[in-house]
Length: 140
Image 1 (cartoon, rainbow, N blue to C red):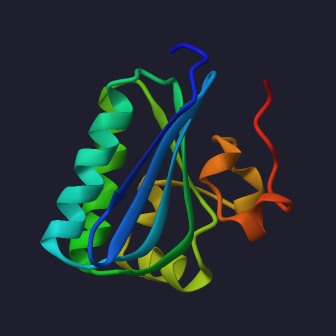
Image 2: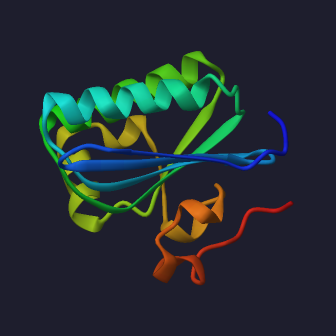
């Protein structure tokens, strides 16, 4: 991965995904809901795009992810599995308490690396402006 700034915004009707890399930081920001087959496919395609950059770690800001259907949960699990196969550790940061409860109830939480928002180590430009000041900035 080079030191180039990269940002790609991939909106759909219910789920918007911001994908970016900077130096050795790679990440996604999920905003909205992942409830349809199209949303799930969109998430998986975006994770594949991220993995093409061969990061060792990738950070997913989930602070503005509001809803996950069973399809959305399966997409998160499949994204995590694809990342593991590619040799990338995927961190899901800042997921709401309600979504974490849903993941625990479905048994998926133990298969994901869930982190608090403050642990986010991806590119800060992916974070919503009002959240940047409270989140750790990536090291240059």
